[in-house]
Length: 164
Image 1 (cartoon, rainbow, N blue to C red):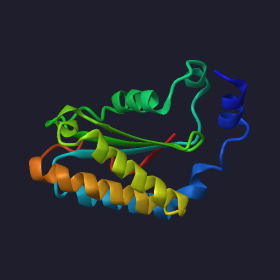
Image 2: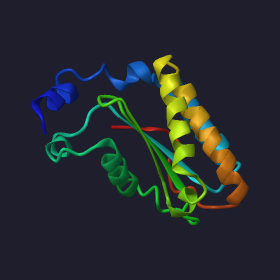
Image 3: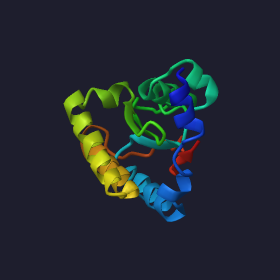
């Protein structure tokens, strides 16, 4: 843990999440998730974190490790077809991570996932946060629906984004 990184996360952290993701933006994302889940049995979860908790900072964790931790903590892996998808954002680190469960991950190359993250990043630079996330969900759902079409499944995850 460096002092600079700690300051970045706690003292110099970006403005609260609600400025980048006001209620209407969160509602848009919820609607995108609900729409995507009508085309596929895959489950989508969006987690937005302003800054890392101090214990995570002390461990010098990187965004991908934190995303994997949240993937497990919020049970995104707990789907019937092993096709859960987590979109994780860390605002202090300007990090975007995609974590896909085993069956879903087999359908994408790392290059495809990198392109999706890059497109999200471009939208974020334009301050189009909800649009960037919705486009990513739509793109992921398009591939997932071909292999995991919608069927009656238990919807174990909430469709609204989680703000930490």
